[in-house]
Length: 176
Image (cartoon, rainbow, N blue to C red):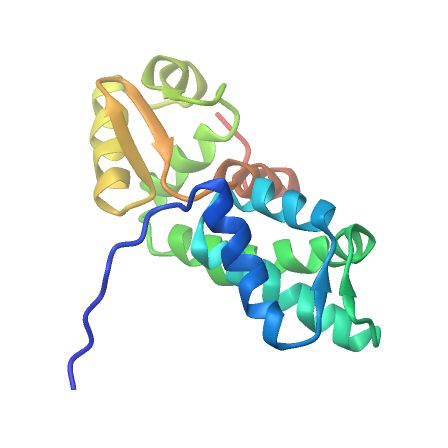
């Protein structure tokens, strides 16, 4: 059978909270309202992130023999959530890019944001403006950035800039 892919954008705050809490209702597990608010704010309404945060918090609660998801549990689980995001979500987006595309993408992390301004990138990396524009277009085609308007871009995934900063701070990149 064929499956139909559907495009799902980000959820509004109430929808994101429901997507996080509704599955818990049949499990006996509860979530503190402060935790739900923190998760909803952190995931920016992206369904995949809601699922990942929920799964990691669930696993941590089960391991701790807890029946309640709390902000303390979130604090303890956050490093593992971001480790998984880095390996499973962000890194595959970068690894498929050419070295020149990766250079430009990693250079965006040190530019002011949002939005990412082409002028700021021109001052950050040692490439010609024409080359930068071509590479930015390829990053848009790759689904890593989207163009807001001429000379202005944003990342397509939430917290992607933070990932790039973690990666650059780990010594994987130094701007020219």
